[in-house]
Amino acid sequence: MDGIPADKELMAEAGLRRPNQAPHDRFLASYRARMGYRDTPLEPPAVHGVEGAIDLHCHAHEGQQDALAVARTAAASGMGGLLFKSSLGVRRPDVAGPAGVIREVAADLRRWCEETGVEPIGLWAGWITSFTKGLPMLRAARAQLADGVKAVWMPVFRSANTLHKVGGPPIWWGASTDPAEWSDPLPWARAVEVGEHTLDEHGRLKPEYKEVFRMAADHDVMLSFGHATHEEIFAMAEAVRELHITKAVVDHPFSPFIDLSLTEMRELTSAGIYMNFTYDEISPLLGVNPADMAAAILELGTDHVTLSSDAGEPLFPHTVEAIRLIRAHMRAFGLSEEQAHQVCVVNPGVLMGVR
Image 1 (cartoon, one colour):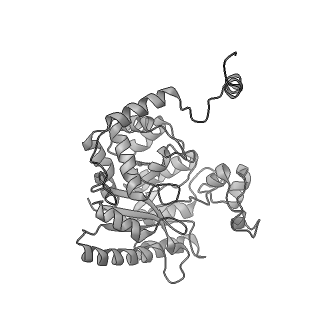
Image 2: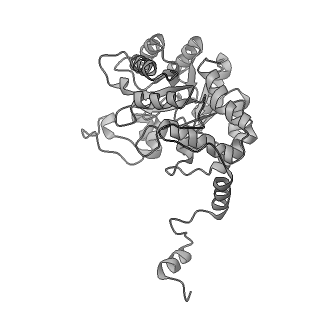
């Protein structure tokens, strides 16, 4: 390999690319998309291209974006609303849960809107079944639904699937006293032992989770499958069919947590379950090819598809910008304006009960 620098020669022998070399087909498609896509130029702090959009997956708990600040930006940018999957209410002893916190944020937003002349937007709280504040899960679910949460997530951070794939803080299962410690991915048996798994030994949805599904149906709120395994997802889909639930969602289907094939996505959407694609998936952290995401949406059709941010962490843009980015990428890679409107505005509005 005369004439090839040593580092390139070694990488060539190993069959490796340099870190900044993307696959050529992705590189070609992305460059054409970015050069060909045009929209209203950004004029900070306003964010264009998000008008009417509703984000169904927004984070604002400790160490993440401020709920009021992002709500102001969303309102100033003309969004339709934000559903907070997480908020500071998880650990606040003075509120029953996230709905109380988001009511406070909504009141602060209304005052700011009155002062500035900006139109207020919808703000809603979600609840994750893991966060029970020491109550039995079903009692906690009843309390949170009565308090006004508009969405329920099945286990996420503490699910066995999460612990099996990325690990978690051992303090959660009593193996450490250091809150900053993070374990390696756990063997599946150990993950099921210390984490949360929704299936029984026969592969059926455990009665307590089935009852949460029933409660969600009775309150007509959105239900997300969380970080479920494929076996859990299809058991949950069966419960959706049995209970005639119309507001069920699979978050970030391309994420390694979920990793559904197009065939599996099609089976789920045909049962009325929404695929909620997120900016997280196409972000540098996960690196899903946006061309693949757009192609999947076009193949599935837009009747049961939504776009969300899954933003809030400091490594991401704030939620409003993340919504702009995922919507813009999907438009650049083939969705029509009408299709983008459906997945960003219409379908999320149906899930939040405002359309």
